[in-house]
Amino acid sequence: MLVAFSVAPSGTGRADGSVHEAVAAAVRIVRESGLPNRTTSMFTEIEGEWDEVFDVVKRATDAVGQFGSRVSLVLKADIRPGFVGELTGKLDRLDSALDG
Picture (cartoon, one colour):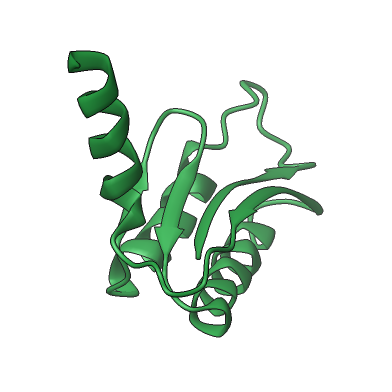
């Protein structure tokens, strides 16, 4: 499965409203998981089996929770049993279609 998620704290007490330190804590957990992943300006994508992906998402969410009084989690999943390598495979097929 592929999961794209965004997690951020609120109620941080920071005057500038920045959440980069909290997001860094979440992304660190994702990267240390060993699962294929990619982070963009808006989402982090992670690929793996249901239980392992959601364990990482939970730990990342818990880490962000230490930075504020509330946590917002946005999550989108692509569940396609039997397929692996879709983190890049989907983009490879898109690029091929654009080139053809």
